[in-house]
Amino acid sequence: MDLFSFPPIAAILDAAYALLMGLASLLQPIAGGASAAVAVVILTLVVRTILIPTGIAQVKADQTRARLAPKLHALQRRHKNDRERLQRETMKLYADEKASPFAGCAPVLLQAPVVGIVYALFLHTVIAGHTNDLLAEELFGVPLGSSLIGSIGNGSLTLPAVAVFGVVILLIVAVAEVTRRLLRPDPTTLASTPGGQRTLRWVGLLQFGTAVAAVFVPLAAGLYLLVTVAWTLAQRVILRRKFPTEPSTGHV
Image (cartoon, rainbow, N blue to C red; front, top):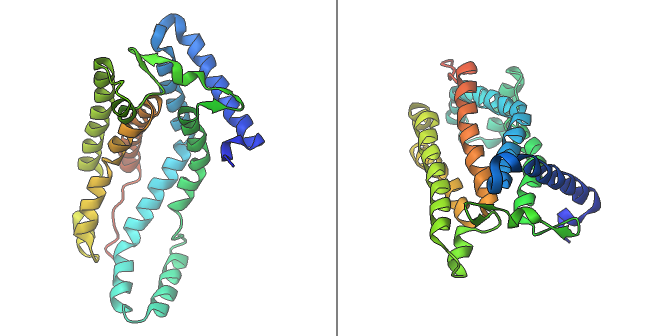
């Protein structure tokens, strides 16, 4: 059974669809044929604004992890041959610091339902029993429901589609590179952990995962991804200045 056909979820999805298409209609006199694409961008900005508290919680969790990292590493070295003792001492450390090892998970779990509903708007051809007309709308002649890989596969790829998808994907790559350079983990801290340098390389590569996803998802979802990564970069830069992740130099 499709989760989004479950009546309560289908009703929420249909309400979000009505809101998005209503916004597109309001924008029609201003944006013309691109009104639906502009509505997707505006909806994304609204969603990211609503999720600002989860972003703050995530940065605070990062701050806590950075502060406790040296102490955790010391515990791991001291009790590397006694896993039960290591677990007890680790939980005691978190209790003493009034922190939780799961603090970083809560923001992700809280925003998952909202993001899931938004993605469903771009991926489902039928919503609450009716056609998803959003996917038939266009941006510079390219349907919002088409994907780059799908267009290549069915032989419908056109020059405008190459240009539109190319711009979206290249912008996502550019944001990913800026994110990688500005927000990569501290190499000095990672160097003291097992596999730290390998972790650093993987973190750098994962920044470009969104660009890969944009090749496969519909154009509407690609626009959502572009706005999301740009917003996330700006938000993280601002929040990291307000909540700097300076690791503690204390010892256990």
